Image 1: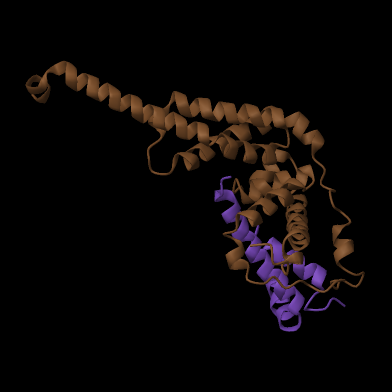
Image 2: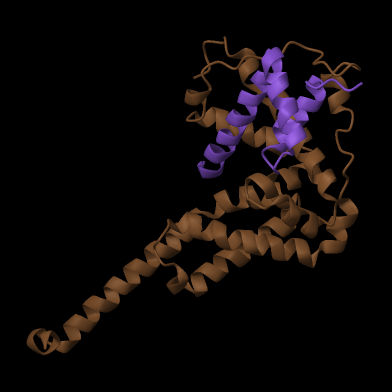
Length: 212
Length: 63
């Protein structure tokens, strides 16, 4: 009816333009998420080539089937959802290499450094001042990046599977073929290490007035 | 004899484990006893909570 009243061609052109713009905006948003996705993929896989592959696969999957994006979340969140599946596929596809690189003994001496032989903490425990504001600081989150990046490979992978991919310890055991007690120990050491790192790189020189 | 309030080394690991699994009744008792006597482990507890929140913030930030 409307098309007949205004002349069919005009409406078709208008609709086509609208669809084009929406598609371009979507593609642009997908493209802009690349760095973000790559950062996680690298940290999780500890292999730049694999990381590039899973991010490329994720973006292709998104651009091929934009209709799967329901608009219930942001494009970025939706992409992260796809990326997680691609990362799992990648770990499974390279399961032999991953399994042979797994080292559950990483940082085995860490607890001996932190605790005295009778089980007490060897050093004074740190007091972290005003941590709530810290969470909104970009510099702080960049320090988090560094600390996570510096974790030994197995520990970093396990820690991110738990904290970023939100896997249960059972799922981590299954994917990496390690025992649950190994996973718990690695997660614990990862947290001890993260605390040491944040203390050293962030809270330690809190008094410095230049830091915001 | 094992002390009912555990050592800091054990308790630190339990506080961490609570993030990843359910603790047994015995483990929960150790935590409760230990909390009475140890400020350092109390700090660790708040640091673990802070690190959990930091991971949440870290996940969402984009350069």
